[in-house]
Length: 178
Image (cartoon, rainbow, N blue to C red; front, side):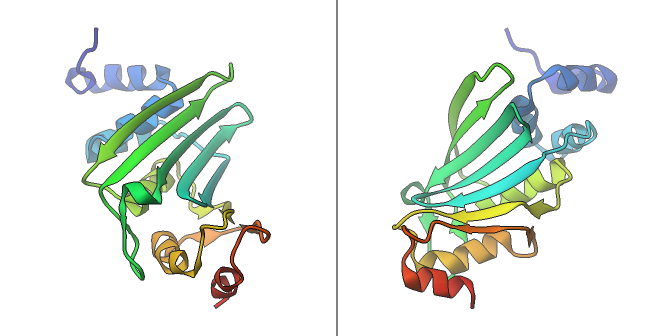
């Protein structure tokens, strides 16, 4: 049986939040500005945030060696326009691994938020102001993806750029350096 967490007194709600697993805390933070503020107050920290680009775009957030969560969406599920960022609606697949290596999967469809908003939301909640790695890995990635990816990542520091050059078109690699 579920209960409305937001109806509890603030101290009780924070106590319940502290007992949740990390992917539930992050999912709860998406509900409203108030829930985002509550989850942010827990002081959660990510060890790395990676963006992987191939036939999908994935936000991979690691918390330690045994806890991670991935938010991903295939390009053909949402709308994407050349020279613009990836658009909503965004069909999201989420996988989370915990200490016991159990995999939890769920999906949701969001008509109100896009990949840029998710990324910036998690960076803010986790107080992790950078992308640790941006990795391109697929022959389907072409130069047309570069500008939308730049718009999603605009203003964020990227520590490392990874390329699987065997699978990337030459003009895509060249456009990264422009």
